[in-house]
Amino acid sequence: MRAHLITYGCQMNEYDTHLVRSQLVSLGADIVQSVDEADVVLVNTCAVRGKPVEKVRSLLGELRKIKARRPLLIGMMGCLAQLDEGQQIARAFGVDILLGPGSLLDIGAALEANERFWALNFRNDLHAHVPPPPQGTLQAYLTIMRGCDHHCTYCIVPTTRGPQVSRSPDDILRELDLQLAAGVQEVTLLGQNVNAYGVDQGAQLAGYPSFAALLRMVGRSGVRRVKFTTSHPMNFTEDVAAAMADTPAICEFIHLPVQSGSDRVLRRMAREYTREQYLRHVADIRRHLPHAVMATDIIVGFPGETEDDFQDTLSLYDEVGYDSAYMFIYSPRPGTPSYTHFHDLPREVKTERLGRLVTKQKDWSARKNAAKVGTVQEVLLRGDAHEGGFLEGHTRGSHPTVVPAAHGADHPGIYSVRIGHATPHMLYGRIVDAQGQELPLMNGAQSSQQRPDAAAMVSPLPMA
Ligand code: SAM
Ligand code: SF4
Image 1 (cartoon, rainbow, N blue to C red):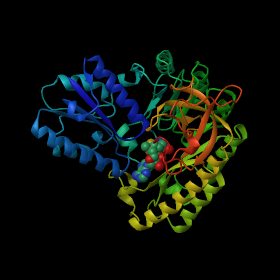
Image 2 (image 1 turned 45 degrees about the vertical axis):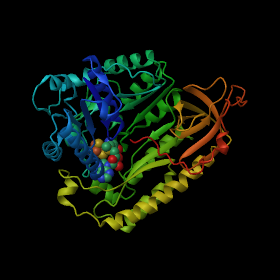
Image 3 (image 1 turned 90 degrees about the vertical axis):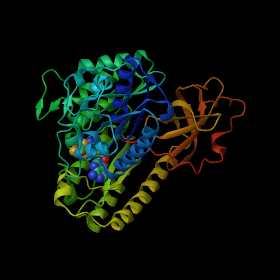
Image 4 (image 1 turned 135 degrees about the vertical axis):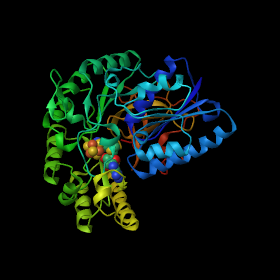
């Protein structure tokens, strides 16, 4: 069997695709890099906004055409698969295998079945399942919890991924050990609300550490870098900032989605915090980590958002001075309270506001990145950039960074890089040694500061 996997959506989906891929490998499948080579194509889907749903629909249209010409098994997994909307799409496009986010371990049974196989259960054994580590990469994701106990009125995730279930600390640390043995140097802990780790459906689970305590354990494991996402402000506590400050491996990067700067909108979103409470968290973080890199998520044009509400979002952006942000136009999702009860704003109002917010974000990112010029940053270089002679990676603060390959440092790893040039979305630098001396460039490598497309390159942070 030759299987090809395609992933849409967040890091949690990336992790889940890896989990399914490793199941396939254990069943003897060859993983291939294109649909043309495959006899099974599995699509891991996202349902958070309308756009990723449309992408899945058009991909399935292409797959259906291929299937009309030759045998092909088509599988749909993940959030969209769990919804009526996804199941209607699956029927329309002749999907053979449908696995909800809680049924991924059914992939073996699905491939064995000689008929259409759909599974939508939330299997308990998924939480204790420890997939083998990813090979040949310095970076890994580690899911510490699944599902979500919040009910933000715009969000489909609690429906698609079910209630919050925290994985046991033993399973998490066992998976981490395997990742370390495989050479992983940066691990990102994943959950919809990592600050509520161990607090499932209102109760603290016996024997489970707080998230801050778990962070410290992971930080002391020997891994070089620890990141985490997503931090819900409602459950954020100062001890997380303290753990970040006193554990060197934990990166000084925090993704704290605010969604809106207006209390009225936050209430209508059921976010369970106010602007003032959010800003208090920011102050706590800055007290412990004055140079923390701050990122956020913002939804623009939530139903009923007035110009004054939007101005509150713009002023909050200035008050925090975010390094980066994921900005989304509100997308009405069938099955959510805001879809049922609120009226969507006109498209042109939403896009015009998004334009203004993006301008602000670029302005702040340009300022924050410019301040890094001349500094030495610790960069995890993942491998070749698109052009030969360059390596790309990211800082502890998740800034995408490009450097020319240098003698003695032409392979993936963690390096010191002196930043020589910055755009709103990219840092450019040269690798330096422990004394701060630049290493000689490899033959043919250009200085990254003179790279012809340096000013034009735009590469957003990896999607949350
Ligand atoms: N659990 C995380 C939290 O509460 O911050 C967020 C997870 S959600 C999958 C990722 C982001 O998608 C959210 O922070 C929100 O900004 C955005 N999002 C979710 N539903 C959306 C919708 N209906 N329209 C637009 N953006 C949405
Ligand atoms: Fe969605 Fe809110 Fe849960 Fe995040 S906390 S996954 S936005 S319901």
